[in-house]
Image 1 (cartoon, rainbow, N blue to C red):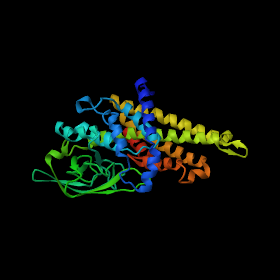
Image 2: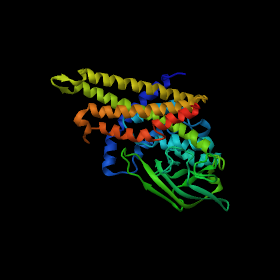
Image 3: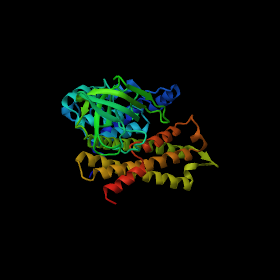
Image 4: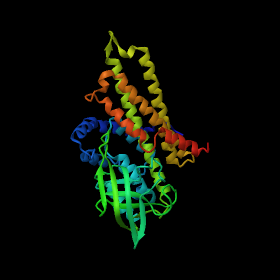
Length: 380
């Protein structure tokens, strides 16, 4: 399995990094936080991302995409992660888009997926609940058959990219107990449907997220994505892809935090010497470098395993996310500490990397969750 970028991916990585840097995401992030802009991203930058073809890259040509793989997607998410770009690429494209690509009908893809790829509409997956703790089978939101359709009642939170999304893909229980694997059905629910309320969440990383409540929301039978009661497999596959994409973003975040810290160590003087000359700090920096490179190998292995449909793909996804969660937490904390007092001030950007690390670590399951999942997959 190739664990390095090929020639095309190397070119994509360079182009992506140059584009993301040109949009000044850190400056925009600070402004959005100060203004309490709960949309959490720039529509103008999102339009440029669409024009670059990034929203199309993960989908087949038959669905209007470019037919590229997850190993190409992580190149883009790494570039977005380096400068903490807040555009909803993972929630909208990789997560919600994958659900439709995997199980949507031709009509559903034309109505919802094509506009998303074209940048005229945004999707959001509503699968998490207050007590689910990343277990996709823990679904309490209920959907009961009424007439020729279904009535949905319950709450989803957090819904990543949910504020301002035109359509939600909602996981609901049509049968069974709240933690059964069977009986989960996926529904397309336009945000303007009667009974749907969306409450924007103000999060520490300034990302777009929401609580979505459905109170007796009625949808037709044509709103079902995939088979009634058989939605867990589709949901799991989509989250697997989004988890790898997020691990790629986290790789970019830790890489940038590390680079900024090394630059600071080379420039900051104390006791008449550059602090980077202190052996204790050199050892700490060397450990961070090793952790980042281990994460890079784990992320690339997971992405290529998913692309190739290898039987151990799920295990490698958990390895990548556990590795990324542990490494980013370590790098971000060390970055703030090695910046000293200035690292604790709001005027310095390094604190934003720590805030993002804390949220990303828990998204789609933290390290402990994925270690337990790996053990279960291996029948430990």
